[in-house]
Length: 221
Image 1 (cartoon, rainbow, N blue to C red):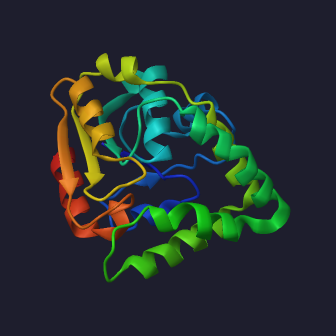
Image 2 (cartoon, rainbow, N blue to C red):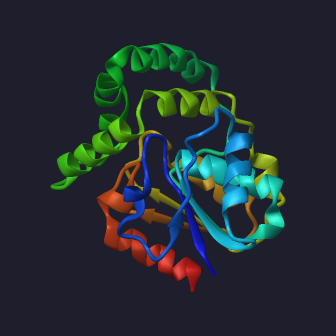
Image 3 (cartoon, rainbow, N blue to C red):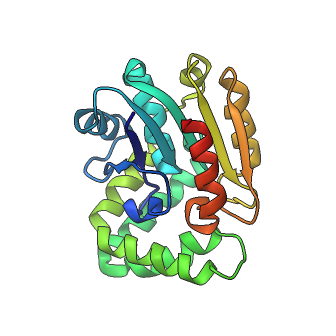
């Protein structure tokens, strides 16, 4: 069974370079979650296991809303099943304007990724990789993804209706999507497994790749 992975905002396949064999499909070309999910479904195998981290998890939830029969297993990592809150939505447009004005680097450096990670010996290397991924994707992708996140639907009802094998995984020190968001998702999905990765924040696939890979292998087995 093919594993399809979806990266977080302003990340690419390098987010999953240490994970089990997979294909990483882009979520960069549209400005709604619904259109992004439809594009993944157009590019994916007929049936597949699906893993998404952060924004990738948000798109993954829309995929199971649109085509639940095509997904055999689901892994949601460091993500959020609820719609965007108004105070966060209000921050999006100023960030978009800065990015489109040529200041994507400062937006990523000052307002986003540094708040995501746990302390540790690899923190600076992970931050450097995140910056490389963001700059490679560019400001237009930042704008589209920001708009998609701002208008995303609430997916709690989608998760209540989902019954297939599911792993909810989070870094213990994720401040962007804290623990209560993951216990909520685990409670909504019948028989979901919740795994907490110690020593990781919002990006456990990079911060603690060995523990995260082991968890994904167990879910896929």
